[in-house]
Image (tube, rainbow over all chains, first blue to last red; front, side, top):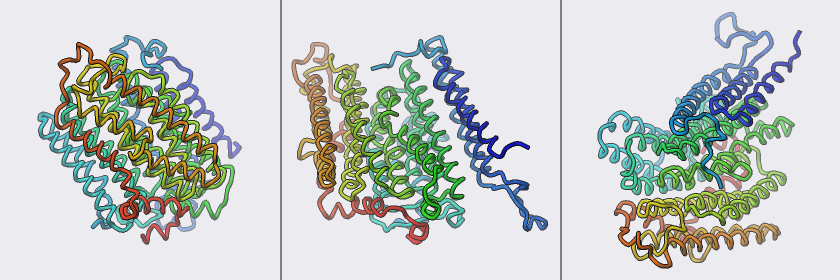
Length: 116
Length: 494
């Protein structure tokens, strides 16, 4: 029997892994992957929010009266959030490729002409 | 009249314009220009109509609130819409000529209109997740616009901006998820009532911290400001003007105000937090600006500093403080976008942004010279320019609350701002004309027109405090925030 809060802890851990990658990695692609991991942790968190014990799919049918259902709203939110994440990721990868064209490297320590 | 059914047009029109540009104007510059300008003009007209109409709300798709998404047009939303669309319209006219230096005209217009649609959406939505979606629309369009030049620096700045922006958005989404988990609703007014009934809990504090950090990242408040001095100068000048002028305000400052005043309700702790954040931003921004020689970078640091003023005014939480904050928000939109347009004109005419390399340009570029001067005087708070009045109100509001430290801090930062802009004026426009600039010519008419109108708004901005004008635009906006937490009944029956 797993503890009720265990999924939340794992979710927080996943988020931390993503943020850690963004903050500490030197490679553009790894930074982008960090963003993706953190994003999926947030999506997972939304899905965990709508989970109900013994809940079933939120579809209204004759036998459903009195049944516990999972909350459908966060599922819709996650769909939207995944699409937004896709756009962001596609944009970031495109920029990273362009940066590679200009600098010949993915290493951010060598891509830093802006400062001050 | 602006009826409830017309509210979605404020998002639908720029969105439609963006897609039409992408569909029809790929081959032809004139079509793209016409579509872009017309769309922004329609949005401007709609926003002006909104100011003169009573508050209203619209349930999207006919789904009643709290289930459906509610679009709310109240005094604050109308005020923000006018600010955004006035700046967008003048910047668009300027861009018609300025963007000749770039290729990809239809992409520019499409992204510009998408950004406008996102900002309008953020301002009129009454639903927290919907706000997040519009915020992402505006943000992603702005990342792409920063990278528009596709040079080394533009790409580097855009990547940094996009990473910071995505992290900010994730914090926001997490905060929204926490609040949804606690209150079981996403409608802001409904959420405000549920928060009142359920009371404070550790989870609301967590959510508030997450949301404030996310919005502060979008507003570039110190310590979340590091992306701004790279991103704003790297974009083409009209886009810098939009980003510094209105994007950070509608995505960051407006959302913080909405959240703190209308959803959570302002408390002494929150008020103190905003005051401290504002004061730090003001100081750090101006000190970093003082040592800049790149004109656009200098302006970007001043944005950090001036947003601090707005947050300081709002943080006071009194009607006078809110009035000062919102008025400064409007004024800053005008003069900061004008200054970025000026820097674009200088860069186009002389080929440099470095102040040390300029000099004596006032004779060769008279329009750019006097518009820069009026914007500089306005941002430094010299009477009778618009910035003076808003800063005066903020200082008065501080004194009224007995916050002598913040009042003197605001005056000190204003003096430093003046010093910094004296440097700009001296090095760019006064002194001896360099030999290589003897044949520099003033920029084309469209660019001069945009700058001149904005400069007139800087000079005459103080007139917004004349009672008749104040009751029209500023007072309804102040009332919305001062009213505190709103309830769903009030919003639906607007």
